[in-house]
Length: 147
Length: 104
Ligand SMILES: Nc1ncnc2c1ncn2[C@@H]1O[C@H](COP(=O)(O)OP(=O)(O)O)[C@@H](O)[C@H]1O
Ligand SMILES: [Mg+2]
Image (cartoon, rainbow over all chains, first blue to last red):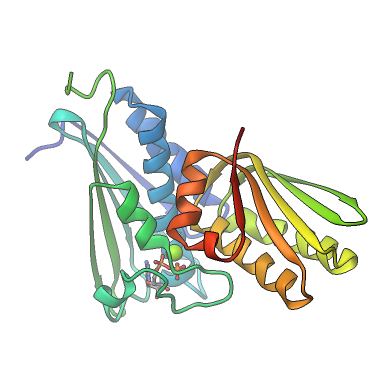
């Protein structure tokens, strides 16, 4: 399936870019004229994935984060967030609510939030190579082709 | 992101304004904890009425303050939650630890 429209964004893994990344992806999704709830869902899920790349992927260095977003038929919106950081040893375990390897004030709920706000999430990761998170959501709104 | 702190002898109110993410949370943490440590108030109220965005960093922020307030025997409550924020805090099980009040 080919995207009807797509965009790419590359940022450095600095926490100040978290707000920029989620706002930019939301601005791209805005052409579908989705409802406010769906936009907030996308923003929140993107914020979680980008924060994870910053704090877990590149804990002691500044690396690149590659973000891609695509629009498909029927209002399907996909976002891919990729880093070339440390990677995840056990993805299944990482996806469990409350699981965190950092402690401090990480709640261990990033993936749980992504799952609850998206229709589908997919995580691939390899130790030493990096992590890719794909988020999928059917947006509801005026230009989403569902009405 | 901004924070507004007011206090009475029995209550410290911390009002958060703007977006709460991992980047902003550290400043909120420092300013809140300074006020909490100074007052050791029996009730600490976190007002989320002006919060326009929050990810799981906001949950971590509430949990962190909860631990501090609990450690000296105080209690904490979260007020003016939108449906979305209330839902996220419930997802995290916060309603078992503190009072969560919705907007309106
Ligand atoms: N991009 C990433 N690179 C490396 N590890 C990650 C990445 N994303 C998530 N993880 C791992 O998965 C765990 C769970 O992530 P999450 O649910 O967002 O909770 P939290 O970020 O609060 O720890 C993290 O503690 C970390 O071990
Ligand atoms: Mg996380």
